[in-house]
Image (tube, rainbow, N blue to C red; front, top):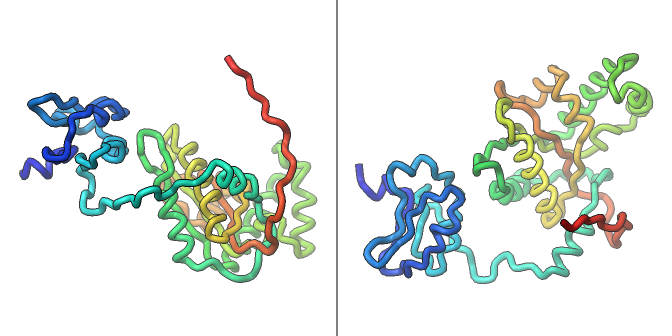
Length: 277
């Protein structure tokens, strides 16, 4: 087998300054540092420990190192790309709102895919990238999901479930024509993860948070669909409707669509409480 194909990292001898940064930043501590006679290298016995995080590649000042994971797909980052002032990012995040009123205009599938392409870069435990997605794009299917969630709520009546005393009002509102479950959102985004992973649930929430934040830049409003997320974990008809694959479970569900109203100010929030130790 070609040695370059086997290598974990590819190093350009003419560009490498032997600065040692790649070795220092590797979270798995598997890159042997360079010296005057050798280049940085991942020895064969350590290759399986590489989690393909890319820290070595993206922190190399002279761009001498390439992580040998689909190297043909390497994307150059333009100078100063992604630079955002502290003031701008502050206002961007503070203006983010949970949207519960949507227009009837659908969000194009390619726009949703653009946001999800950004979300691929969300952190995950050991760079496992366990999150996969189901998009319920047809508003009629969203309505079906909301109805099944109401059916699940009816099974909670007269039980000791924490929502038991809360669901009668929701059921009544639904039966009176008000979608209190999905808020008439045109689309739903479902993040699903491996059932057996002890950390994937957190990875799912992190990925959805990235979507929640990035969507606003595309003019897409979002709201975390808590009722649907609870229902799908225990109500098999809803799980089937959402098409959760066998061996996987729902991390959470998010409503999305074009916001009906614009945000023009900032709400109040409790002061930050910090304990310094």
